Amino acid sequence: MAEVKKEFPQGFLWGGAVAANQLEGAYQEDGKGLSTADVSPDGIMYPTSEDPAKLNLYHDGIDFYHRYKEDLALFNELGFKCFRTSIAWTRIFPNGDDAEPNEAGLKFYDDLFDEMRKQGMEPVVTISHYEMPLNLVKKYGGWRNREVIGFYEKFARTVLERYNGKVKYWMTFNEINVVLHAPFTGGGLVFEEGENKLNIMYQAAHHQFVASALAVKASHEINPEAQIGCMIASMTTYPLTPNPDDVFAALEQDRKTLQFSDVQVRGYYPTYMKRYFKENDIEFEIAAGDEEVMREHTVDYIGFSYYMSFIATTDEEKLKEAAAGNLMTGVRNPYLESSEWGWQIDPKGLRTTLNILYDRYQKPLFIVENGLGAVDKVEEDGSIQDDYRIDYLRAHIEQMREAVADGVDLIGYTTWGPIDLVSASTAELKKRYGFVYVDRDNEGNGTLERTKKKSFGWYQRVIETNGQEL
Image 1: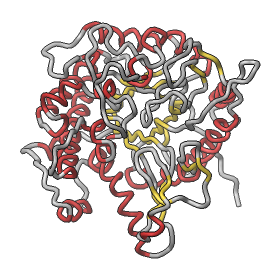
Image 2: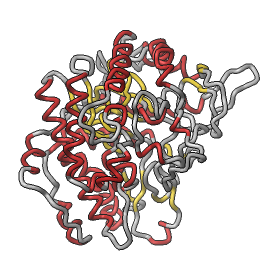
Image 3: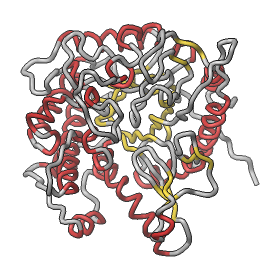
Image 4: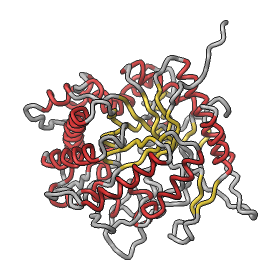
């Protein structure tokens, strides 16, 4: 059997990914308004609180707002070709429905993107990542309200025009399918007693699909050379057994994710959802012109996060043995190990996911989140020996290389949280992802000093050799 060449393409975008609300801090500086993240002190899956006495690590993050130059210098030392971050909506439009943008907020991202380019990194920018103006939730009901489409479009056009020439890669919404799993974070949704929650979530999702298409339209008009993608939380599902019921349950589970990429890549609702909508009494409003906008303005590439795979079964007893997950839970896979947070580690599942997505869409793919959240121990000599993180990333990069050899068009890889930041799911700092350790704990104590972990030198070598030395 002839040997197949396994290497990443020249110009492959190695880097790291963060979100504004999880590391910037400075949550009320320079005219910034309150966002949904600012009232989610326990993370995206837990109740909100506006109690000023309650500790909220998002408020200060890791002070990236004031320290971004030193952090970007560390990423430059790592050899990053790109750096993924997001624009905090409330820095630009503090209330979401403001007549004019906040110049101080616009200038911050001007300075940030200029510094990134100076340090040799291509900005990869998510327009809305796990936050929206709190005022849009309180005054309009979040994404259930069609008016929010116009506010988002104005925000998107403002930043697309302002940073034209500075940003080449954009994404419209982070993990757009999260609206079904964490509806407050994903859609600014607060439900009243007796409401059909599924109906409201799908109405909100529809409004986001239209808004995403309008952002794609704006991007293509402003700069046809720029690339704008969608971003989904990808969760490949395996059947627990060869029982045809389990096989179909896995297909149905995957479709709940794939419908979100189907709409943004193909431009229309997949036929398989019609039965699901009917059986669940889901009837949302599609305004005149929506379908045309969605059809005519599809994304240039597919960005996605990958942390784990899932198991599906129709066996009620087995369903009681749920495994923890990022946004969902599933039956524990006996062939896989788990992280300290119960997330099952499945590198080969990444190769499977890449092949499924590329076979389905034939569009470039970009892995914009992948990483291991773990408790890191600082040794007596000050070092952090995070071999477990190296092992996790190495195994996933090996499978990426296999997928490229399979023929998948993969344009880049940004590990989640290259510097420790506040976790989205649990709003804690103990769950660390970075190559750079930040001295801050779950109580908000610490010097914020940055320290390189063992994985820093390892990832530096991976990038230097374009993924050949792992």
